[in-house]
Length: 93
Image (cartoon, rainbow, N blue to C red; front, side):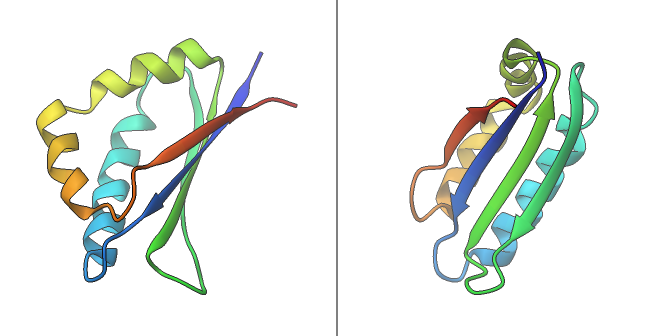
């Protein structure tokens, strides 16, 4: 069963563009992962600190496996850009 994952991010003040660019780089990796059907980064018009990634996957397991494609040290560096911890939820039709 195909699923959609919606991930919410909030950048620290002054880190909006850096977080956007980091997430863009992550998407380029995610799109190459087995089971990825699509991935898109959106930035709020009202508040550029709010970002969303919408991912489509063939199943939840594929999404979870894709997380290991991003080096842990890269993720660690990104946490300095977050105002709040990232949050994500799985959805199905």
